[in-house]
Image (tube, rainbow, N blue to C red; front, side, top):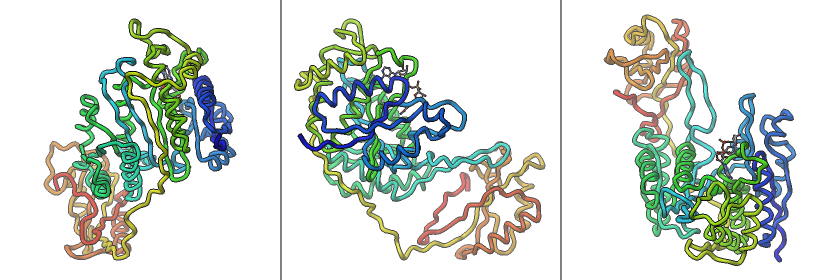
Length: 484
Ligand code: NAD
């Protein structure tokens, strides 16, 4: 037997301990060469006053084993507790969330018989940076941050995954018809990196029609790569329409560490009753085995699990009178899989995993030393709630003090142009984005912007934020206002 690989294991909350016990029973019976190192996470830790749900000492185990098999935990409501998942992903740099999604028809009821897709979701950026501010009485904001290295890593991961797992197509979902800079960057990087993979078919869809197709014709999708928020939503839709929320596993992959877990939560209402389906965690463990270089054991367990599904031995969540043969609890289901080790499914496609080279994924674009960055203006955001919010009043007031350095080009309210020449129908909040620009072909300095802000301050304009306007290599690097 090969040397045992240390892994970090957490038993979690709710149904966590039961499904972890079932999973470890199967791993051991199948001959997985692993040595679990147990850490405590979740409710107990939160209630000891650790707001992250994980003791600082547990990071040592995670950083040394670099592989985490995690049962679901219960996140206490309110009270400043932070999501352990988000903390773990960010702390360990787990940039790729990988969720295979399959239907197991006719053995598990599903809306679509032939789903077999993998969603590769960016895991660190986008709206999940958690940078939110209340700016005025009426308006709050959340920053959507997307970086080129972040896009390159996830897109390259998706193509590498497609190659390694013999997938034929990668589909990219964005909303770049609206978010031309952020989602536009993701799409552009997808097109650039896609060229390095000529044998893989590529397509791009706007996320709304993409989601509709995912719900209606999921069999047409293979690997899907997308940004964090879209990926979060569509991976639950995909799991739900496959009929398998209790069956899905997921991997969170980083450059050095990886975390494997079921996609469902701790299901507290059925905890301790030996009725939970352990399949989600079993599937996560199968992904872990491939990741740590034990593809034969992964194949062995996957086929025994598929055989068990086919044989009609089912837990309550997938049991159907007429088509299932016997209703079993969590541990009995695991024992049935152990009994079936060595068997292969007859109707479902048998699994066959191969060693996957742990490639270090590079960022293809080095910083450009000749990059020309010109400061050509500034958007000043102002909290203003006077004169019945008449845009002409704030606009004329600001134009009068914009000085020789700047022209007040446009004012928008929630992105819509209201000055000059707005429409009276446009609803205005107390949040005004005022765009001051330098003369055509000229740049401005930080000092000139500070001078402008001083004038605004002297005239009692309550500016709440500024956003510089740059041209990069001569190209406008900011969006135009709607109606500008
Ligand atoms: P949930 O996934 O725990 O449960 C949703 C529904 O699915 C429930 O009806 C539940 O009984 C059922 N279910 C879930 N897993 C099942 C299984 N293995 N077998 C049979 N039925 C199963 O989602 P929830 O109720 O929204 O959340 C419960 C708790 O889990 C919350 O505290 C939430 O914060 C936490 N949560 C944790 C994770 C995680 O640790 N990764 C993920 C999601 C939710």
